[in-house]
Length: 450
Ligand code: UDX
Image 1 (cartoon, rainbow, N blue to C red):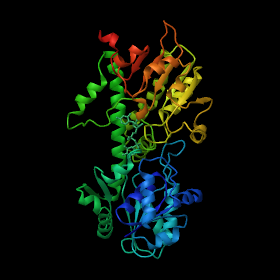
Image 2: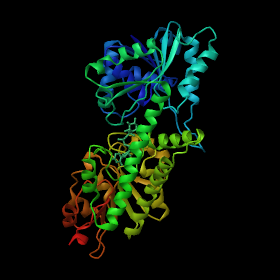
Image 3: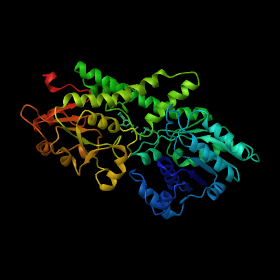
Image 4: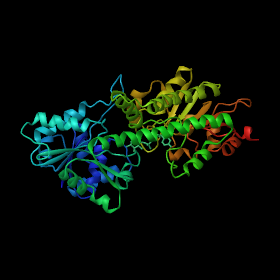
């Protein structure tokens, strides 16, 4: 079976190389010629553990190829997947579907034998049907159901563990309305079916909504536990114990109940906004999701306020700027809000992030920040700082030499340096003996316990 994937970004690349690993022939298409040239040599434009090896394997097997040329790949394909970006539209938060619709038009021009056109990009309800309409309008000679079908097959990949998520998903969702389309997509996912992955067949609109409902719900869980953490801080309770015990209720589940500085990334912020917008447009506003969006925006600001209130001094070291570990993605990361707020309050900022410590990395991060000092390691970042803030839970921050860290920092007897741990990767009892004032998220201070 031949698969053509339009868009060689994060989703397209992971999906394409994984299908290739299953044994299918995959052509990955993108209009960015530089990107395609690099990919042909096995160079990966993004950081995702395991992806480079998988792409290389695909190239070596001869089953994975990259091109800017859409015509041949689409004409020969049994399945065409649209995996282009759907960024938030400026102003109203609705997903910008320009690239999806443009891809649909181009695909239409090159369809030959019966093909299933699949929307893989996260698209608002109704988009796949619009894709079908565009194909139909572009090619009056084609009949839906006979020459082509449209289906929705959302992805649920987490950055940093996308390959495992693809290979061992909790479920696969296929929204398809003809027997032909269902059969072909079932065949595509057979390797997962053999591993007993539940495959949920639905109509097209349902599949589209499943993606938003999933991300909306997960974002809601995070916003919920973050607010519980605030209560814990006032009440002297421990949010980690609350989350653990609450999560042991099988109806709730333990995952995504880790309190922190607010969610970021390429999905939750964009998808919650788009869900709220779709709901409003359909006349069924989702006040829950609107509140989640508002709470998460507020969360990031309140993290900055908390630092500004606690730290008497001039210099702050930030450890980790990406929205989570094992990714180089800065999109909607809490650091993008927190760092400028600290600068506004007069602090100078040193930054260390494992993926942005090299010169090239710093150049890539430059458009996101201004006037920050880049450091080579956490200890370098801590030099003369009044506080160290852990913003991302990279593994290498989990066993810092706290004594050495403290030695670098600015301090007096009355004013000990701060270690502010927004990911709860340390305990107060382990940190304070090294001469820090320690604070974390939603956990009682030892002083208030005593
Ligand atoms: C998410 C979804 O998990 C994935 O299924 C979807 O397809 C794309 O969006 P991703 O954005 O890669 O994946 O990261 P994820 O691990 O879900 O984390 C998102 C954000 O939530 C991060 O900022 C993370 O720090 C935060 N988070 C996550 C918490 O604050 N607490 C948690 O318990 C879990």
